[in-house]
Length: 295
Ligand code: SF4
Image 1 (tube, rainbow, N blue to C red):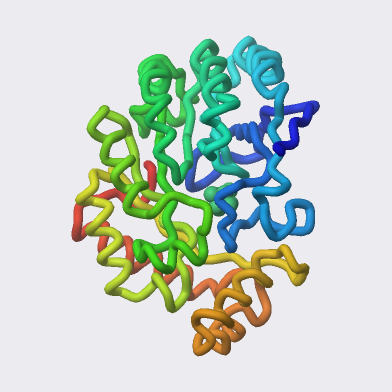
Image 2: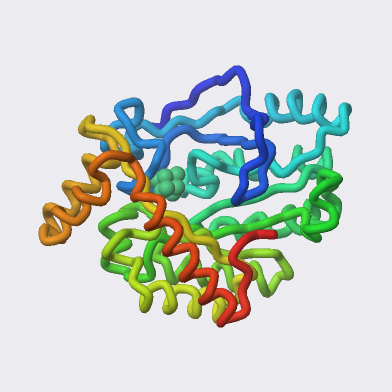
């Protein structure tokens, strides 16, 4: 039984544009996520260990979107809208509620550009409306010289290894399905790529694995790929750090001491780690002729 809720606001304006996805706004028509990735940063007691059980549908999202976006459009405050930033926009439940699609209808009406981050092939259902957004969106002035697209579709992956993905992303489609969906988006003329976040320490971060991932996503038509480290938060039973360490204990106990060292003080690995995977992936992106940023 899905929880239907009414919310007071749906369109969030960021204080600062996101460095990676370039969004100035975000919209999340659902709360919680049935894909249940154990590393998900939204995890915590509010959603519980199994986020499928606490999934909520923001039933008044379309009418709020109309009200809020029309005001922004009137003032000419154009900016990229991330759909969605804190949940998956194409969970199976979207097949029934169509909230993501209704949000796109409003975005098209007011000519805003969008960034869609997904792991699901259900995005293919909306390529017709995304095509119209792509052709009509008004980019913010400072992005116009750098970006030629009104729609950016990114697919997130943490590993290409199917077995490992099943452990860490139990409710999500297989990585290969995401790549096949990306290829279809590319064939339809979209600007699309991969957000390789989080790269999993000692599991998907070796030089060989980075190279295999970058080479493979290029073969599937990606325009860009960017990498980011794993963040692990909290001590509660539903927190990402607790769940991830439980997974290690069960499947990779030999890695536990290494992880404890890596996450000894902070919620993310040391800066040198992030710098190293970024530098390695930059070199590999040059080798395979793929961008390592959206712009
Ligand atoms: S798909 Fe995204 S929002 Fe959903 S659980 Fe995974 S990381 Fe979190």
